[in-house]
Length: 259
Image (cartoon, rainbow, N blue to C red; front, side):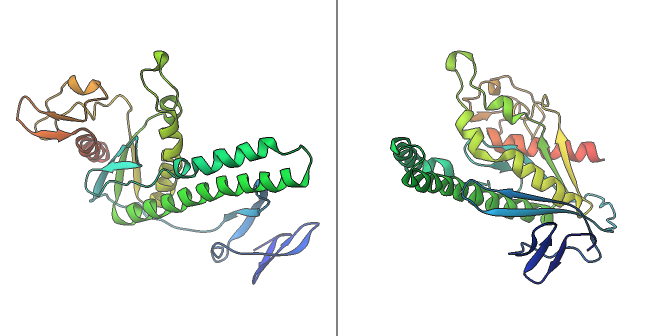
């Protein structure tokens, strides 16, 4: 540690503030130098301190031997080529009724009143709980996969674009995509792989992962229709689950790219 910020035991020393009690998430790396410190406050009133540190960490690149393909799942997190699919409760949906009621109560409270502030805090705590549950789930999933595989392939999709409703109301993905946490998950996965000298391989978004039969390579136009969840290959007769087949194709494309 170096400079005006120091951590000793369960306290942190901050410039102009002095010593403050600290609940530390994990110890700083040995011989690390604190470069920047950011203090933030959540709507529920909790304070968090994040530190950017610099330290020597020699990581040798791993020659990939084990590969995994992940396909974005609209009503879960992902479908994996060689793992169980990752599904978790839609935390926002579960809390939605309570949130709506809490928001309605908040709107009826008099502005500037003590009761309104108490209700605002209840709403903030509900939102915060959902975010923390999701983040914990994503950390555990990304850690498990990063430890188990040398290279993981994903499609380089735009979640922001998917969250927009298509003209005419044909598709309504906004809520599911917003709840999914895909971007946060892939960011976690990327840095956890990099820490171990491993790779997150992003496959071009135009790669037809859902249209190719992973058994014989036949390409169908049938699966351009997103409502088609299962299909039979007219060439080799293989029966495919749309997302599982796509995940396998993504895995093999990642293998090809890394070769």
